[in-house]
Amino acid sequence: MAEEKRPVPSRMAGKGKPLKGKKIWAFAKIAIATAIAASFAVLFLMPIVLTITNSFMSSSEISANYGSVFAVNENGGKVYIAEKVNLKFIPDMVSFSQYITVLFKSPDYLLKFWNSVILVGPIVVFQLTVATLAAYGFSRYMGKIRSIIFFSYVILMLMPYQVTLVPNFLVADWLNILDSYWSIWLPGIFSPFAVYLLTKFMRRIPSSVIEAAQIDGAGEWQIFRRICLPLCKGALCSAAILVFIDYWNMVEQPLILLSDAERHPLSVFLSKINAGEVGLAFAVATIYMVPSLLVFLYGEEYLVDGITYQGGIKG
Image (cartoon, rainbow, N blue to C red; front, top):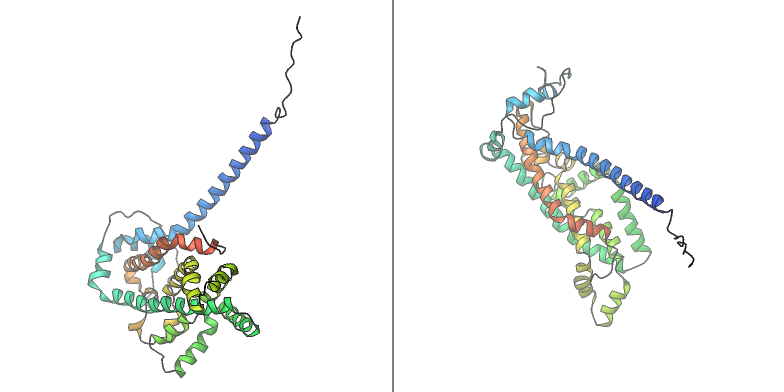
């Protein structure tokens, strides 16, 4: 009789359960991380959603839900909140009266909105123009003087704007540009943030790419225009988005440097809406969020690309 063949033990035998346990543990970690991220996302989005939905409420409904928050006494002071505030996301009846008042009946809000555009637009355009030229110089040339100047840029960037507000006020007064748009434009145009960001990005460009261009006879302007700028497209978009959002929400600069309230942006005007116009505050805040949201959604891909890109040429 032929001998029965015994099955050869497999090396993978007995390892099914550990592998299955590892997969379950990996899936559990992903699920927990996703749940935590979703919770934080909901918390961060809740004020935005609450502002947008409440902008479609009537004034009486807003007063009924949040009247205790915005209540004032006869002397204009705040009243102690003794009642619970009702956070309501869905209005009982959708009303467009707040938007009709903001867009058609009261021109002050649109005037302040265009003041914000006039103040922020030139700052974004010319700050990036100055920053690209300065960053190219910092990235191409080495030396002690360059290091000292760049270190000064970093120190200025680390300082909060409130620290430099008094010097800016004194300089604007000395230049006789106080109470004009130039007192906001000039400090914004020469802000060090974009210079620092673009300098760090341009330094990641491989030197072999620039050397190849020099061998082909390219000058500094051609290297800057045809090599550095195309490779820094993501960084430029990232800087533009961050600069726009920063100055779109500015409050201290107009309050200190512009005494004429007619020149103040909408960000300042929002804080002055009184208790009788709480519904308008929600509508104006919603309109004021639209440019920031559009800029972020349009440039999200460039923003991520500018942060994660490590230099070199992409295929």
